[in-house]
Length: 312
Image (tube, rainbow, N blue to C red):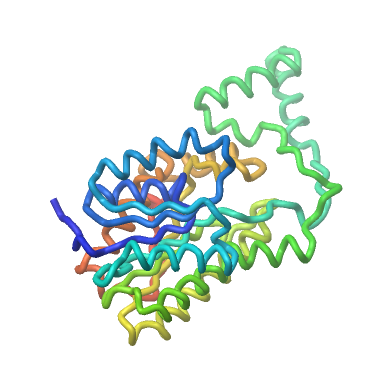
């Protein structure tokens, strides 16, 4: 089995769930030391701490920080502490930015057209079933795996009284767009990147498809992709490769926060040539591959890890 250099570290921003945690598990199995930055409430730690114990059991060094990794103070605290963990020879092979901190408010009020209700009423009259009975059957059948019924569901509820404002927008752009650069610059200035380092950000199909309520996150993904392309050029002379992974729709906590996520999942599953959703482990496997020496010539790329979902 492939084992990484014992002095290699991965810094994962957003590593307590989803793609970040799956990547930590994959890398730990192959001997890479881990620095995980996350921000979770105390109640969530009962789920997270056993996961961290599993990482330790793999025999790697593990440093965890439950703090605001989006702030300069939090970043400085992590890197100051990590200096001691790295020692004289430790180097950061991978920086993975897997933060899911974006505002999901609407740009404008949304008033459903009632088309789904009208369609269901037509079907109900044709099959001589009470509309409320048909509604229940459709919902239950959809929840039991009939993804093709998603077009008949009522639209998700949106908060028309809380629309996206300038502060919501700017915080999302910083958290999911430009914050990765702040981490890269600080680590570089400390001289802690490996001579062949990898920087990875995560984007989604929402970078080009308009999902209602996703405008701020979509814009942040565009910023992230632009920043990573620029880093691929400007940090290349220092041995740092920068790439973006476009993950397919995956049933994570981040997805479940999006209004209408059940419809997004259903549509993605129906489109995917391989007949299922992307899993965090699928994406972690691609990240692992990009950490290998053989991936050194991949720089400035957007790599789709979606099973072909985007072409379905």
